[in-house]
Image (cartoon, rainbow, N blue to C red; front, top):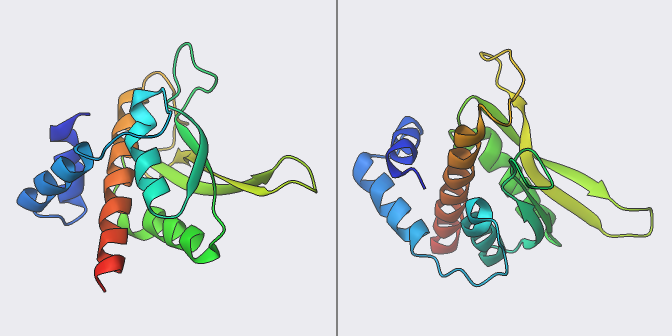
Length: 160
């Protein structure tokens, strides 16, 4: 986890530096209980699971992995939670120059609906497509920023 880059990104998202450091510390101390082997997505899978999303597949992407970019597959029986996640990605979370989305998919008409948290493409200011090799560091930082933002967002909801 690139703590300095995450602090910078959270500060850009209007978190004071001290609060950003506290959130990173809380995020880093989350017990890793799920059988997730890819280090880059372990914590976000825990955060999602703790907040009502059942993760069942994930990959931090890159050389030697099934997928080129990070993603997390999950099931969620609560439509409000899916809307919350989409809202977080669109309005709360300050990611690198990459858009992230919650995509809906299913295996066949009789199967459950699955959701995928994944990078969607470049933000408007950046016209070049995502390069899985060149953008790897930014993608992994984004995963942690998204995880921290989800953790903080749902903590606030639970306090209200």
